[in-house]
Length: 179
Image (spheres, rainbow, N blue to C red):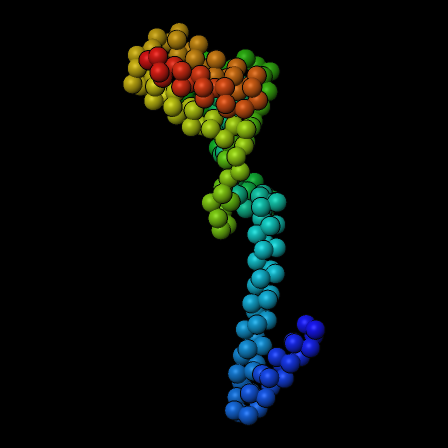
């Protein structure tokens, strides 16, 4: 039935274009319909590929749950184009990490460089924000260096033991309420 309707539609277009002498209209419609069909098939495939293979062109933010350091890595066509590792306020407070401690980088954000601004919700999605909250708390409230060091170690411990940022977020919120 669909084939009959499609052939009927083609015949109708041919009759109209022949009668009116507008053969260009026919080819314009063919090109337009072909473009719409191709776009409808190609764009979702490209979108899906970019989501499944984010290293095609993306920026990642990671946190080292052992030291509190942050890392930004950029990829283009699966090639790392840049990597920036910075000490956070937590890292500076706990001091130098002992030799032999391997970094345990956990993904925080993914920023695709092409198209949309979307990041999946990773287990440590709030970790960098939590570091900023701690920094703000320490600026606004007076804590001794020993209390700051204890807070930094507690946050790192919660990231490691909970395997997410959830427990550390509750801890920071509780500290803020008390301060």
